[in-house]
Image (tube, rainbow, N blue to C red; front, side):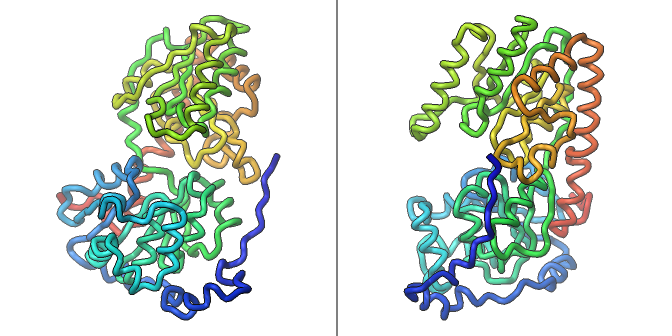
Length: 407
């Protein structure tokens, strides 16, 4: 079913008991409007001080750090807010909400705040990845001296955290997909006016490897062991394919659940393994462990599959396409009302059911010449649209860093 949301009222408006009255009167909710003078002044300095912050997950920020590390005109400082003061950072929803409601002086006095505040004062530009705990704390502590950029992915859009970010302290917000921008604009109040749809920074040219003809009938899902990836949908696609040709295979790539994984994850993984053992696909699903050699793995793949129920961008699709694999992208159900997967990828890559996906795969892999031609077309689109040679200058402009720069 399509999900529709009404824009929520401000959390300070719905307070019939007056519980939040002391906070209304504190300066916690009296921040000045952001202006351009900070970034303009910093742009004239010989060295740009860039703080790249996240909460534990630096998967999509490492390429940004690498882009500017070692340049003479940029000084980069990573900040993992979870490691600032181990065991003392507000992490639960209750703790983060309490931290958000504290007056600035009280929040600044908390054990984790001193290092974060010092890094903010040092910075000319702050780039915060994921609109969750790091974004909440940084915008609550922001002294107003640096340009603040926050990037939002799909995970946070389904949590309370974007509603706890103080968007009045944010200059620019980045969405990695147009569909995500549409959803966030419906459900999150007071987003900044400067909004950008900008894919994650990726070096896709390194994905180019020669593929043997024998991989033509091999499908893959990367990072399958997360419920949102819905690998059972991909196995159903494989079952449909094998009714026509039993030589089709599926690689499920990625680490399984850890010891502390929640029951929802372990139950999902068990269900995937049970489905993979059924007679219609038995022996044709290979579970491949975590690998650091993504280009080498993709050299084994003829079709890259996005079977997810939700994605903000799904970098594996762009990586697979850049390798010359044929992309097959489920129209992510959670985002269908907001443009779905077609808000990111070409309409011809999008499918709506396992049967629909199987038909696209059979059509594009029926012989080697067609498969290689389709893979080449996908590769050209990925490299010309999503590679860092295209997106990198846009990040430079966003962060106020000269393209090229000095070493």
